[in-house]
Amino acid sequence: MQTSLASNEDWLANDAAAPVGRRAAPRLRLSMPARLVTLTDTRRCILVNVSRTGAQIGLEKPLKKGDGAFLQLAGIDQFGEVVRSAVGLGGGVNGLLFECPLSDTDVIALRHFAESFAENESRQLRAEVQAWVSGAK
Image (cartoon, rainbow, N blue to C red):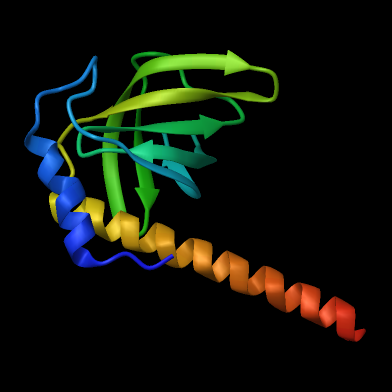
């Protein structure tokens, strides 16, 4: 999946538009592993989506509303407060509101990281399948 910088800039240009519903900024939908660091522990999570102002993450044990944590991914270390928390079977979801908004550069970097992450995962899967088919594994 190739994306030009121009399309990234087009996506960010919509950032100045009026909020729709409760959203202050458009969301970039992802599904990639990240790390959440709290005062008491470090947890693996899945970054579901991100915007300049916040993120939605999936966790095995979601934090409580009002808790704070650092979201770490692709060289970005962003502090946020849990503003939404939902628990379900096998885990739950937290909505984070960032203390300071991400820059446009950070959002573009996350998008590029996500694209290369997906390509690398696909490449590794193909290599595993080829090794299995050829009897190397």
